[in-house]
Image (cartoon, rainbow, N blue to C red):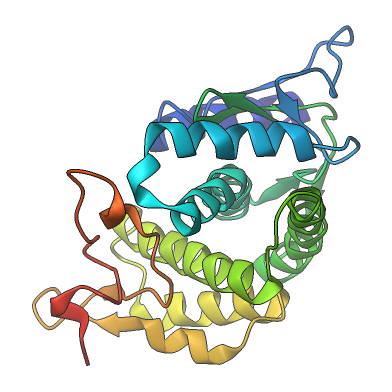
Length: 243
């Protein structure tokens, strides 16, 4: 396939996961640092702060810990999903670090690639490559946020580990023939590539009924603090997940 065909497959597969994950290749006239897009080459601090403030206005009762957690999750969900789709469906990796993301009110949805370059290789090689890309991208977001509030690497690392393992669970949902052993091996590759401790693997448990993997997160998204919301099924605070 030509590179353009890989990207069309990526965009189609992304929209099948969720319509919010909608991407395209930029035309030459498109500027990657135009608002309301986030891009690693620009200072995104004020844009991210504006997103945080809109979340605080939407859910004032939830508090600053929720607003920051939600902001971080919104910044990272698309790059992580695209990484998994690229590696496990395309068997090829675009330059995710250099893509731009669109901020829409109190959400981040939509992405644009500005280059059609692709990297090919084994799962292990591609995971290592994308981990380097995303580590740089997420580090830049953390620096942007640190301009106006404190955000600890330990905090974001827990959220990242849970996000990666959540995608491992989604892999099994899409390809139920994948064995638990294979998925745990893949999870270990992802954690090691991001220099995250293997203790996070204990978050993957065997469901006694389905015999498939289930995730009990180490972090809480705090959405239960929003009016009318409750604990997520994979939340460590959920009574069913108390050990």
